[in-house]
Image 1 (cartoon, rainbow, N blue to C red):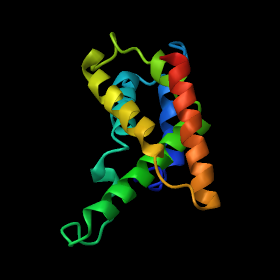
Image 2 (cartoon, one colour):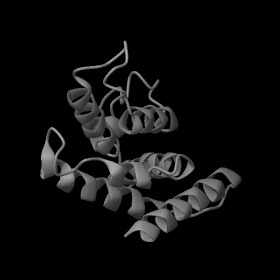
Image 3 (cartoon, one colour):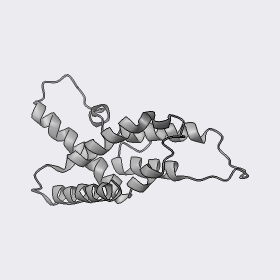
Image 4 (cartoon, helix red, strand yellow):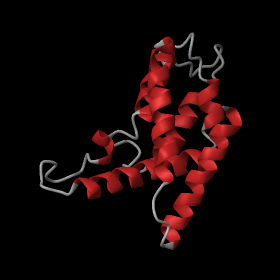
Length: 150
């Protein structure tokens, strides 16, 4: 999140590039710890929708803020992640990940399910401004992409 400048789109672009990267074993720039790196990046990507990321910069997380406002902030954060996933067509990359043979194996599958649920559920907000209308359309696109591969 820090590396991506706390920007959902940048984080998804970085993660997709790292997860889809193919290297040749005879290359001079062979990365031996690529499986570990990919697993760490996958874990970070799948955790982007967490409240820890969404409220990381809250000055006073214990402040008496109405729960409805916090829920709206979290939904907006998750919608931004979903929109970034749609713009990057992330679903084929997620499906191409070696879930059974990867470093963590299928232990990350519950995280994937949570990520998909949180991003798919994020578009239910009033679309009263051009920004929210555009964001909602991108979340709808993400839903279509996920359904295409489901």
